[in-house]
Image (cartoon, rainbow, N blue to C red):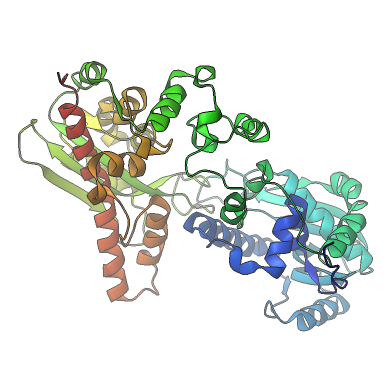
Length: 501
């Protein structure tokens, strides 16, 4: 029999309770085996950073607010600062800290109309809507604050209003009253907390993988848990465009390995992936490739953008999370056998990049021929957005957008290599077909999210000149790699559009 541990007597934070509600095993591992967690990804770190930025901005709506500024590990001081602020008659407190039954919470904004009014909890979120997990988060706060003796009569989730347009940021936030939902849920919190505290006093819980591994948040222990479940390197989870529900149903049915699946139950693309992975054989349809690629017209312009989406818009006419282009690369091939040329643009300072990038596009991208963009919907969105913003350049920008062609659709329909592992992203397709030289491994900037982070750091006033140049070179190298990769992939398509007998 497993050995029973002593009662868990450490303090639980609000975030840990929320994590436990997603997965008890993840909570256990966070406390006892944190070394098993994967590294925080660039995309997750950007979400954290934006969340912090949004939280600080929300405080501006309460100009007389008092900040509880004790360090994260100075819990006793934070509790004391909160108590003192309340006694002093503060109407708004940021990061107000409370503890009840060994659960610690920090409230984004604790607010009241006057010194005799009940309090309201304001939970600030950087998302554009209210999610179930936000209500769980707020309900835990409500339970702790009431348990600590505070009179709380309202709970609000303050989230981003995606219809807000810079420079008018007065309506950046939308408040949703979730008091009723929190009242209903907060009654369940004591038993939930008690269950977690008891669980943490025992051995590691046995919890299977499932949809909760990524819902509502990606779990830091996914790699560890999937490894223990012996999920194959390529499995049912890698089948392209198969819904999450179906993937997990196959898992529950014991059909994780591709060899256990009946490929006739899948669409043509999925069937091809399964069969050619199992056969370890590449699929190529030369006639269909030739039919599609022959529609393209020279000169070919291979275009790729890098963009960033700020939660809090910074430039005229921009809404929250609107994609803001700051860089492009374009390789140009006048004919199939001509010398390749390259043009590019990278915005180097903390100003609105749109007009400069729009002018560079109409000046540098040829006015004729097909414009090649991998997964071209994104490039089309950027181009049409710039056209809407700059009427004088609109005709030429829309002409570029109208000439877009997409090699992704050709690969998805007429090519499959087992090394794709179910993915048709350029970062999977290029190394599989072109070899290691097409890989992004080891680059200073090796992905879109890394490019966003690099751009933010490059234009920051605090960045040294040496670091700024390093980031600049990394960004230029990365975007150029994307478009050169497209050049080579299109060359591969031409070579494989000929029937070999």
